[in-house]
Length: 204
Image 1 (cartoon, rainbow, N blue to C red):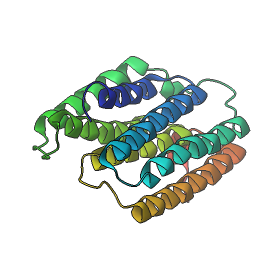
Image 2: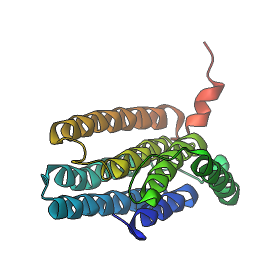
Image 3: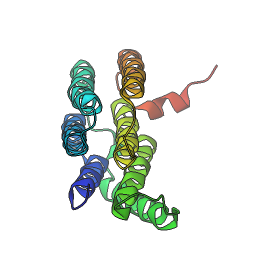
Image 4: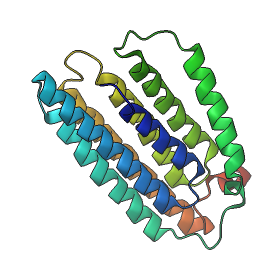
């Protein structure tokens, strides 16, 4: 895999960093996941490998964003969160961290080399989204973006990730998103907001 497609995945990750609405971020995540699934299917067809990993990625790219969209519908915010107003600052910090990590990362031996850099950038982007965004839904999105980076790296490995492992990882992610959905709805029900920073004020 070469060309601009891996970096299109990275661009979608940066768009999530600055997205103001949870629904917009979920749509961007779905687009990123579906593009990754389509790339996996294309690579599998060209290499004569099993199509199961690509099918799993496509199903994941549809199902998990739908779960997050449902959580968003159930936890409407009465107003924009104060911690979410500084999109430019988030973008600058994320760009600095991603560029620094990609520059310092050792060669991963992927062909083409740009694929490895794009995968590293996606993983770091996901971690940055989870760390910088306060709503619980955005933190779940960050985990899924980082996971997309891992899947992107797997496309450069001969044979890719075995289908059984793909299914196991997908099940783990479904459980993770389900826990996040339950946590997000409970936080919203008790505090009137899905802002995870409100938990910092809780005391025994």
